[in-house]
Length: 62
View 1 (cartoon, rainbow, N blue to C red):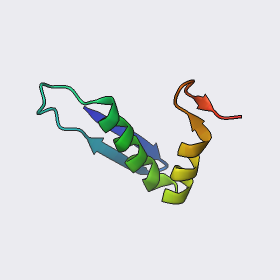
View 2 (cartoon, one colour):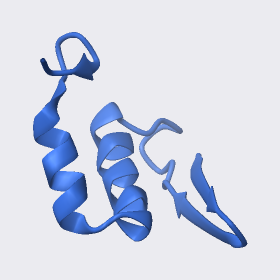
View 3 (cartoon, rainbow, N blue to C red):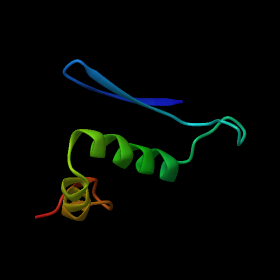
């Protein structure tokens, strides 16, 4: 499985191994997403965004 982010002429790709029965866990996907997003935005911005989101509703907190 791959996750891809394109930003202008740059393309960031995260490959996920499928050694564990062919599936990537949701936790691995989220960590991979954080890693890719931090290539476009600063790590501080990614952490701040994490705290501003609500995993129960998959929305931005009020």
